[in-house]
Length: 174
Image (tube, rainbow, N blue to C red; front, side, top):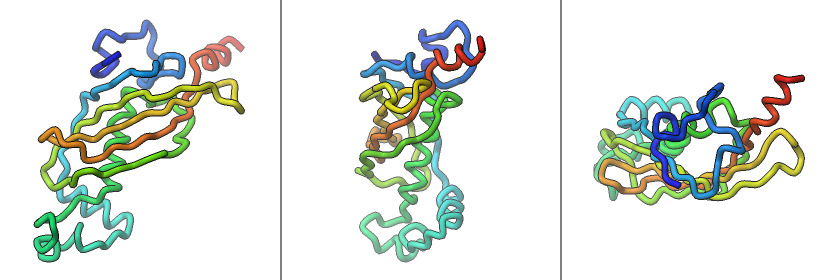
């Protein structure tokens, strides 16, 4: 099943308390092409590097970066990962996740430079009931950040603990 944003693309819910989907609403194989895109700026990179104390000259020093294999400053890869996981949450997990359980794998197959516009595709890879909680299940997502040249710049697999709609309904009726 392939979806654009599930909101406004034929995957409407009668009542929508949260923007994200509940555990029961996901299906293995669902694909989301998220509508939100973001052009990365020099300010984004400088601010992120300053906040995280990453002083690598490849990110901050034009003269150093000119002599690198890229010939220009490289956007911090952790900014890119955060951007990709942030963009996807509006359609998938906003308000319905109980927590990010971790990343199984993260790859950065291509660089990101100032002025690159990133879009995100998410696929549901796996689902299972939680073994320790009856109000949630675990959904494993694959997120890909793709630039304006259709090059994948980040590819990660992430597990999220997702709230069940049935748990919300039980708490309302209690």
